Image (cartoon, rainbow, N blue to C red):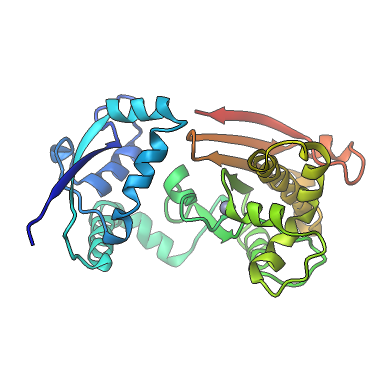
Length: 306
Ligand SMILES: [Zn+2]
């Protein structure tokens, strides 16, 4: 069957003076060496191809400004629609590119990492495929111990064991991380499940039995935003849930002790992938102590990256 190439645009500016060395390196991994960045053939995995039209439609909707910016930074890509390439062929090429451009070029660093890790961050993020912290925030191997669960929830200290609590214990008490960053995101399916389930629902669904961990955030959202459209309620709950998770972290005695002594900081992050912005804030421990129990946390150093 004949191959029908299709052209479309993706966001990339190899010549931007604001590009960091990390961005350049990531670009090299994706687009090949710097010499042929401007005109590169990129194979799109079969599993992704069917979604490109939807992504393009979303990009022409509310995010017209971003779409224009993306068009201004056009990099031509040819999609081979009839390509029967196995998805693991692409994965193999990405791994070999990582090995060549990162591992071998930073061999001493990776050799040291093979012996021990000393990440500065524990990141708790949603398992959603669109919000990978390493891709969005550029964490490199060794920089962030990462645990991902549906809706980036932190269970209360008193409840039973979970993989998130095991990661907290290991990173705080063994690795001595200096920062815990909990990242929420726009259009979170886990939060939508939480917001749409009945309060008294007795379910055998693993999803519902997990997201109910965020029940407090749902209740606080319903208390102040029940008159809003469901999508906006969810958006409110995504951020409320983040702050409830940060408050819960202070309920872990060995976390609270380190935060009190200043050797550990707690941060919230919110990635909006519709408008591509990232909000970041830090828990104000002293300010939070001054608040009534159950009335939330105080935050400081809030900023929005856009
Ligand atoms: Zn999510």
